[in-house]
Image (tube, rainbow, N blue to C red):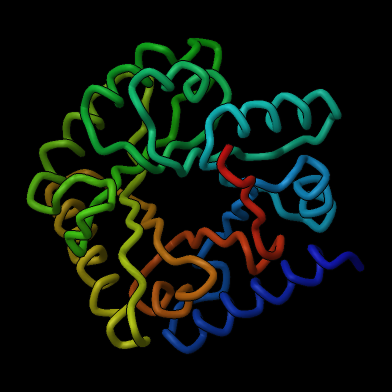
Length: 235
């Protein structure tokens, strides 16, 4: 068994235990393996271990891996764009990815809709919300989420699936649950307005238990699967 395969099993076990402790059914939370900065071989190893959903933060790097692994014949991979998305980078995302978690402006959503190839299924979209007001965090403010979500839901080549958040690291489990609880409350409020959301994307390697306890349906885990990341030194 490879390290990546063993790590995947360990993370899945954490998710299942967190679901059990929260009184949620097995399988209630999807694992998104965040493969940014790791090469296509690492993704292939995770795929061989049964993982199918992968998240990429950097558009060019992600597109290269998508193309490489499709050419290699790896079937059934679901690619998620989970990094900040500038409006001038929407075309390659619309053409190559299956999901986008980071829509926080209508202009970005409109461009994704316009640029989604007609032969592909609708692009699955989450609205990113800045639930804790972090000054350096992307995301629409909670009080603006309904208006944006309704506008996104009306676009023809997109399918609005839910909300995503990346709060600042919390000092303990209870504090993390408090912040994640705000996202869950907003998720429920938008559903009460008729939006029929089914995805709450929150929780990462260090706080997935708190996210699952608070209602996450998808956790984004990278380092606990692939190991520590090594970023290139700035030139």
